[in-house]
Every structure is written in C-alpha cells, then in structure tokens.
Amino acid sequence: QVQLVESGGGLVQAGGSLRLSCTASGSRFINRMGWYRQAPGKQRELVATITNSGITNYADSVKGRFAISRDNAMNTVYLQMNSLKPEDTAVYYCNAPLWGSDYWGQGTQVTVSS
Image 1 (cartoon, rainbow, N blue to C red):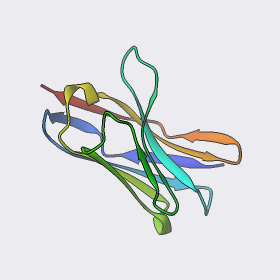
Image 2 (cartoon, one colour; image 1 turned 120 degrees about the horizontal axis):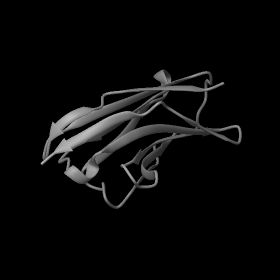
Image 3 (cartoon, rainbow, N blue to C red; image 1 turned 180 degrees about the vertical axis):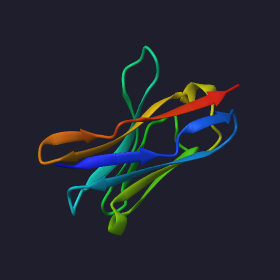
Image 4 (cartoon, one colour; image 1 turned 90 degrees about the vertical axis):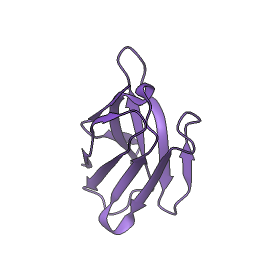
C-alpha cells in the first residue's frame, strides 16, 4: 500500500511563492509522480508530473511559473510555485500511479489572495 503525505500549502498574496512537498512510502520505486489540483466547482486537473529519470510535463497554465522536482532517494516530489495568481487557488493533490492503481495524497489547500 502506497501512502502519500503532502505539506506546504497555505495563504499567499498574488505574486508570491509557495513550495509543496509530497513524500511517498510503501514502495521503493515509483516511476512517475505528480501534482493535480481541484478548485471549487471544477474538475481535478493536471498541474505537473515528473518521472524517475527527471522528465517533466506541465499544464500550459503553469508553465514558466511552477517547477516540479524530486528526490528519488527520499521518494519525495516538490512543486515550487512562483508568481502565484488567484486562479491558482485550489486543493493540490499529490499523485502516484503504481501497480495499475492511482494513489492520492490527502490534499493541501493553496489560497492566493488578490
């Protein structure tokens, strides 16, 4: 059983920065990890993913502002969020697809005030 524990959300003013962390336990090897977000009344959407070898993928809405990275030894993935906008407000979820299942963290709230 894989468990994902997130941290780092909070309240920030527009233009500010936050860094999210997600640590996985229960598996020694997870190829792809990523971040998704869900705003009130909207569907969950992809933010960014990163593979074990460092290949990244970003949603167009966050390119140039967000950066995903990972520490494979610690099974931890990070999301550095800069130049935050009010439309980035959402619950952010860590994700790890593994063994044919999708594993999710509990979510961390990010609120960007204008």
